[in-house]
Length: 232
View 1 (cartoon, rainbow, N blue to C red):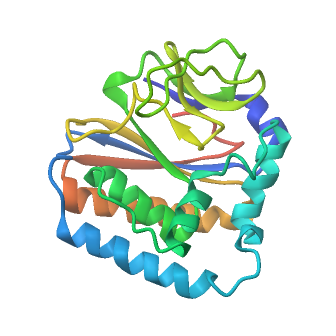
View 2: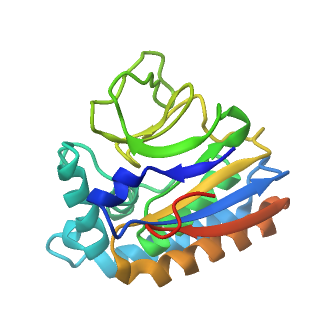
């Protein structure tokens, strides 16, 4: 499998950065008390940092995603990037529930660094995984859903030969490629939209790779993709 970012994405979003972790032979079964504790701690930290802000959506990284969503035709007040969705839940006092170890860990990193993070089970990817503008005909069944909800033409999506793996860039995952307790091999992507966050992305990606190896074992390799390196 090749993971690549369509050249046209960088034409519109030249400063996009992706920290990519490739995982092999992980053990994603069970629930870790230490991981749960990490989530509770980071929730408290972000509540303390952000609850006093008049509009936390103007946080530089969250606002960058709001502007990006507008560029490809998605209302950022109706559709929020995954990092903003996590921040909103934390500020409401709604604790992040356990899903599986990989998802719990990437939610922790997403909330800690306020960067969107998502992952796919590579055993369920057909052909290459591509971040691209949708042609509008790709099938998509959302996480937990049953009906086809194809993207709009020009929407930014992750897709493979069978359809969309994630709609509106990082808004909603597909059920077909979701991470489960049975996942052994996966790809996880940490995202940012402006160059000042390059170091944050690199640190967050290394941090997440280390946590996964600590709690899930297996092999983890990570890469940074941008306009100068668009595929691995």
